[in-house]
Image (cartoon, rainbow, N blue to C red):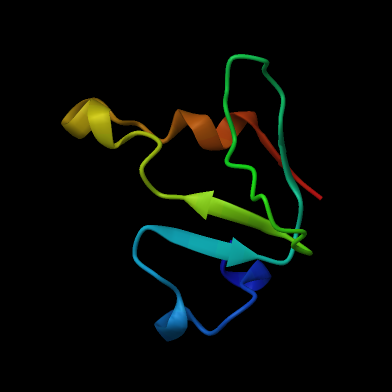
Length: 67
């Protein structure tokens, strides 16, 4: 994702990141953040697997499509 950042890494908030690509999902049971504003990319929220704590394996990334 580092290549798709809209802003410099140091200016990104800790809870989410704005990327200049559209992110979609391969599965219907994955809920992606959708901005109310018309943005040219996607917002990646880093809280997706936080509730899993040490059991989190980052598998959600396997189900995302970046275009």
